[in-house]
Figure (cartoon, helix red, strand yellow):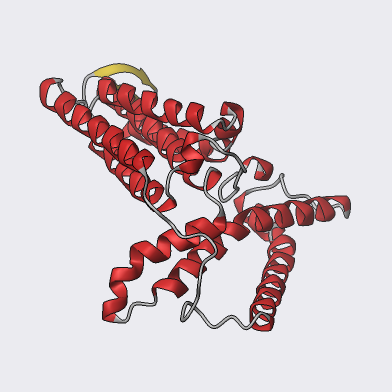
Length: 270
């Protein structure tokens, strides 16, 4: 399961999505999240699904890899769906003992599951197609106006990018530690909830130690390179908006307007 987590990974490429300015990609990702949360019926979701799969196709990222990144949240999707099915009142579809499944609950369960899946698949394209350095520069540029109120834009961008970059590293480290503990006879899968929580202690302690060691090594490396924050820093590659960014923004705007029109003329579910 840990190996299925692809958050924070970057895949080198020269696709249309890769060439979009990272600042625009961040803004488009925020717009995409907003678009998902204003959808109120399944026809609107059909537009969002077409949009997501078009982005995946244009990015040339294998669909299998994108779907693989959704697998770790399947338990959350199932849990959320069950809560919606059994605890939303409405027209009874059928009963299982004291539990009652309603049409409204079933519709809402499907609705929320699709929303979560699209949210993960769509937002993951940002890190899949943007290098950590470009992402840092983009976040810093977008936060630059806040420097007027003494907001540490560069430091915040650096921290966010480092945290995102080290997610795959920590996941790989966790997988190695779990394999080592299982080889020593540790039982991590049987027992009740409390026993499983106690079994995680031999994993969490070395993981925290490894994380602090990596943080110390990174800080030492940055100091050796005379890192002094964003003050006086120059960039090898300057960010510039292009026609591709304008076209991308127009397509996103059309998608949002289309969903708003669908919400107005088609009956809502929620």
